[in-house]
Amino acid sequence: MEVRKVGVVGLGTMGAGIAQVCVQAGVETVGREVSQDLAERARERITHYLGRGVEKGRMTPAERDAALTRLTTTTELADLAGCDLVVEAVVEELDAKREWNRRGDSSRCGTRASWAARADAASSPTARRALPGHVRRGT
Image (cartoon, rainbow, N blue to C red; front, side, top):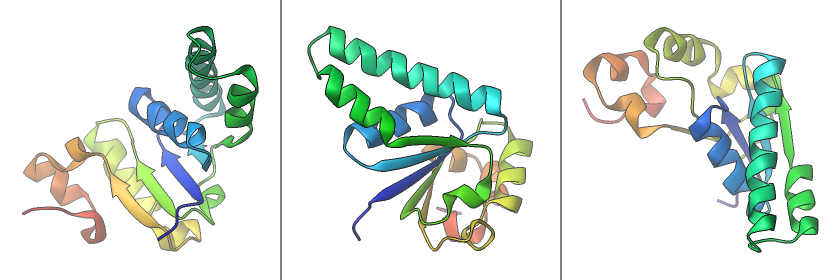
């Protein structure tokens, strides 16, 4: 499967890092957060780290700018439509996981994407029971 567009749900430290790697790799990326304020803070964080890459000579200013044009942030699940891969990086609170899994499966987002959850999301039996069957791993 060719991945041309990635969705990242939850743009905290891990989610923002995943989004950053995706845009640097040339992949259009949609980052979803629960509020516009959190989405803007994530964009600022990604911009900062890409800027550090320029300062350290790892990328040019043009490469940084091109990467940032591939990043879209949103608060709407529907904006994940058309993603080939959606990575769940929601905060590690069981209620938040349950809410995301209740609202966020591919049929509700209008996409037939492959879905991935953070490894620690399935690390305990209680957390695993909160995950929908199509992303469940282990017993």
